[in-house]
Length: 370
Ligand SMILES: Nc1ncnc2c1ncn2[C@@H]1O[C@H](COP(=O)(O)OP(=O)(O)OP(=O)(O)O)[C@@H](O)[C@H]1O
Ligand SMILES: [Mg+2]
Image (tube, rainbow, N blue to C red; front, side):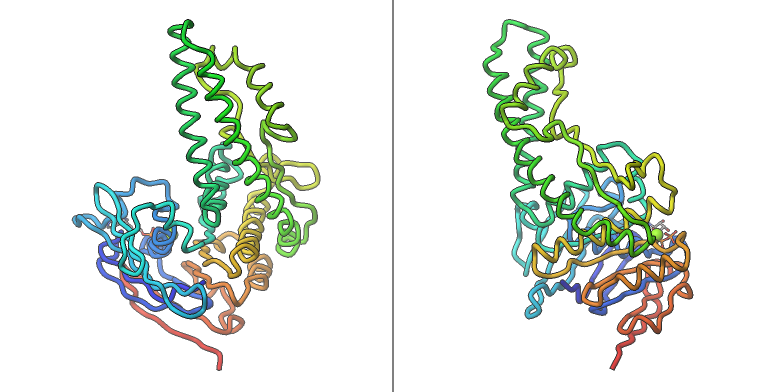
């Protein structure tokens, strides 16, 4: 997968931008606050239709403007570029593929697979389970439309079940049969979501330990998937729902299910969340991202785009070198940094660098190995 070009209109601090990328490494550099993250954010929004920053989408539109446009040409099969456009307005967004409007965003977001590291990803380990579930959902949705559908049906059923539980609290004469129907439907879709998550995590685990070892020299990183559904059949899960019904009715909400799932990053029996140093946590996340790249390659037949926003700022030289050794030359990579000197540019082969200043690319240089 290759993003050949990017055009921006009134996106964040870019009034107008029109650039072509290198098919391998692209380095976006400049001082703090000039627009480096904004640029890779635009690429991410083009792919996923929303930002990786936890923000109201209105802030993506340049101050003073009413509409923002992101456009890019992408090659995935090595032949024809496909034109993608996203228009952001204060009251919503529109997407187009080769100038044709796509009304279902869910169909659009599987088209440009992308793997991103951003400094916020450190929250992946430290934050609450919901942050980890969100990351998991984004990862799987990017290659599986059926996952996205199952998850959205599950979430709808969950809302209905919770609303009905609240009704039952107010009026216990209401039908429990209807609750049973909702529970059965919820569990059947929960089971699908569970199985897709389980499959994803077991595939990630097939790569994770090797990447972690290559970066840090340490053995044995694995993700442990914690779910109420672990090791249970559909009927056994239904039984568990019966056992917690009293609690569900007391709280007016569904206590069991895949909406409470969690992931643990374990090294030699210890959870990195509790025992890992900052660096170890960061390296575990990088290993996870590299594993995602490989998994997507297995599923899609090509590598997704990789964005590394501010990845290298707090890593020691050895880890940076290890990471560059792992970076594959057939993965198109976007790196942001304040310090271009940090990299041994000669070791890159093909790359293009872009200096950003105040919402503009003020210098470009392309280096192609003959
Ligand atoms: N909607 C907007 N309209 C205009 N400017 C904006 C908008 N949103 C953000 N900005 C500006 O973008 C700048 C921040 O850009 P960005 O986050 O890309 O910086 P950066 O180069 O990644 O910096 P750092 O090195 O600190 O990570 C700020 O100056 C901010 O005021
Ligand atoms: Mg930044």
